[in-house]
Image (cartoon, rainbow, N blue to C red; front, top):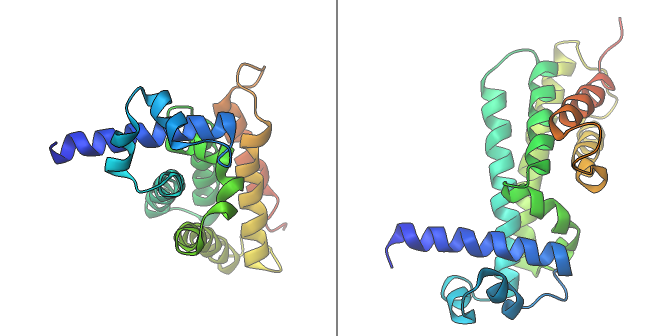
Length: 198
């Protein structure tokens, strides 16, 4: 199998596993369940991954890495810190709510990340910390510009990220407000909460 087809197969396994873990939970799902979801033999899964845990780790690593890439691209476009942070959060929320992205299913199962063993858990945590540090840098820049007023940058960043990521737990598609409008409103509210008042 050539590298392109192997990568395509790997992505298909990750998507199928994310659906299974969302539906059944990581703890109860098996490699057999993932193979059945994808319509392949279990051997195909083991050709790509050593274990269910490796698949789970890859779901989270793929999702967080892409979210981080998007945040860094938003930040690189420049502009005042509040505008960059607002756009970065809007992108994150919209990405989390888009059923066609790796983050959609990852957000449904990320609470099970504690099931990962030490090395895998640390890899996921390091990516999460990189994302948090980038948000902290944006907030710190806004404080230096006199645009944000926060007593503790780290607490502000964690609070904001919790609010942004929690949207996945309560948003229901098909209601009066669509995902794009929710992403816009929540990101605006989160940033407004730390703006300096004149």
